[in-house]
Length: 560
Ligand code: PEP
Ligand code: MG
Image (cartoon, rainbow, N blue to C red):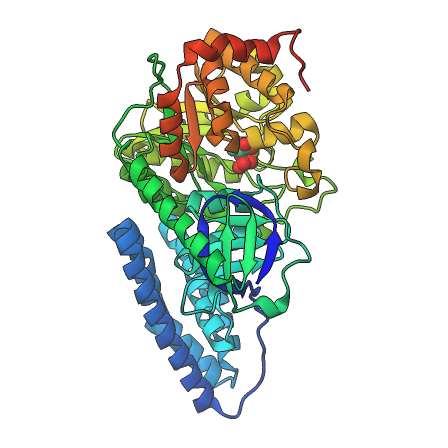
């Protein structure tokens, strides 16, 4: 039995075989073949396998998210057997004597270009689909496993680190838990693990040996403990913990349908953070009151090329309609820093967290911003939409972003396309500049949502990705909490609501503080909704408010 200590970043216990993440190498071999029939047969077999996989994915999507979600995979199935597509590949193999993977790759590029140049937005969106289907066929031909998990049973996935784009593409049904050598608690991979409700441990550099692969491992996401080859006693202990976890979940289930109200009657809205339309069932199952943060950049991370207006419209529309009229805050594109996307071709930066990211990219590249805003406003006709801009530092940025909204609405009016006239526009407060300017900013928007992950990073000058900073990265730091109080006061003075959508919102040690300063909404991972509701319902806020405020603001209390 080998015990390893890391840092737990997503709670829960998991037991299963350890599996190392294998990065998909997609270099395509090219050669001239004399065996054209053999290459053609290889293609036909890979095509059949792809169609079978897509059928399974369609069924899974139907079960998890309904018919509309299944449609995407069914469309991909049709593309895989499209006659023109197949004939193109056949002619490259049989006449040009190309090998199968090279032929699929070339025809995919031709079709993708053709779709991309079409006028119709729907047809343009098919460009990404044809690339997706083709890379599935190529992966089958080359033996590369999509999603990086080649196992029939669910596994505990270990990796040096996982980029958000890699995490998002993993087949979640195959993952019991995550273990990464690097990473940090507020990295996007940890955030995704919490959203998916999967236990995760980070910071085990140098301790995971290759020979552990395939062996039984237990992980405890609350203590950060990993045990390879557990003895019977440890196994039993962990299984008991797993049982307790299930029992606690059952108890929490009883809170479904109840209000988020303190013992003395203060109400707060508890919403959820999501990264994909597929996360909506988890929001509803956990009784989230709405969506307080949809990180729309995950749609972009999932594509090989800029997602078209139509593609985005369908995704936003799905979230809004599935939420059945509950409020949905969709954040506009927030890439840059740790969320890099190749097709954006952003120049390499010395300090990406301080560089060209989020709203800055949108204001510098208005065509990208406009496409997203058009999709958002069109989708607003299907539910209760709030649009939120990330990484604001200045008043002029908000004015410029709002101007773009007006332009988009005018365009939609001229085209006769419907949109709601009740869309709230808000901003994230995640830079000290925005917090300090919140008295002015509040006059320009309908709401604030505090991004405490970045607010902590920028206030304390501590890289949120760097696990080695340990105690220096302290989101409970009075500087961060004082800023939150200031933002809250400025929001209320100007009659707008204020929420927290950073990870701190789910920190039960701070619930009393947030209630005391008057936060109106807390947006957390779906799994955190019921524990938070429990905490709120157990709190008597008027009894603690004065102490909390003294602790925050008083000059007689040591502030660390
Ligand atoms: C934040 O910074 O707190 C936030 C919610 O945004 P993200 O974690 O996606 O940067
Ligand atoms: Mg942020």
